[in-house]
Image (tube, rainbow, N blue to C red; front, side):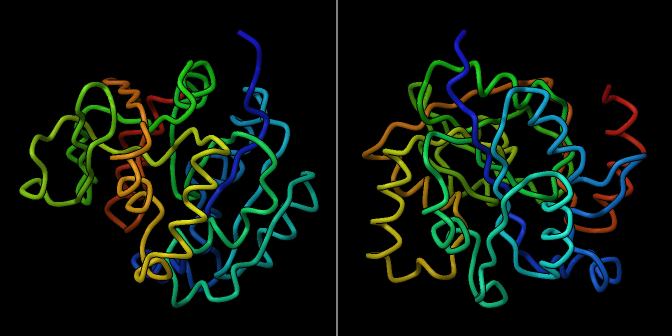
Length: 239
């Protein structure tokens, strides 16, 4: 299949307060897990899957990312209000740098290369990557209807059905990005909310297909328990 996705945007502005004291000195993406830091592994996997242009949205301790980007030929942008805004604001703040359909992911993920490969090969334009249930604590659950995203929440009781778990990697078209820009201008809560909530709120009028990889090996690292699980249970299962 012809490569159509050449850009990836990594959201990395957060303060990582639940991983203190580690994040007093480094941003979450610089957490070492095994022989690589999270950001190093993500960028390597993206490039191995044909991604040529990596854009990192920074905030907390942004100078670490800027140095890393200079060393590896990447692009960064600083979200100046990162301490008081959500990830949706960071995405829109740097959206002028995005020139084509792209992958969107978070900086605190440890994942198998299949996550990237499967999204790039998916025929659909807008796709949310999901997995089976990880029992990892702090999960975001996804409600699916007719193969598409209907809703998502950390609270199961807020959903009509609990069908999958959010991974935190997406394929986004320029059409959806333009709709997100419009939503950012209009929504009263745009500054504070997370990007995945914004996408879910648009999914009633804009189809976002669900790609569920039941056995995908991955984890998010938000706190000390997540970090230990990543090192003990996830990393040994990755190639």
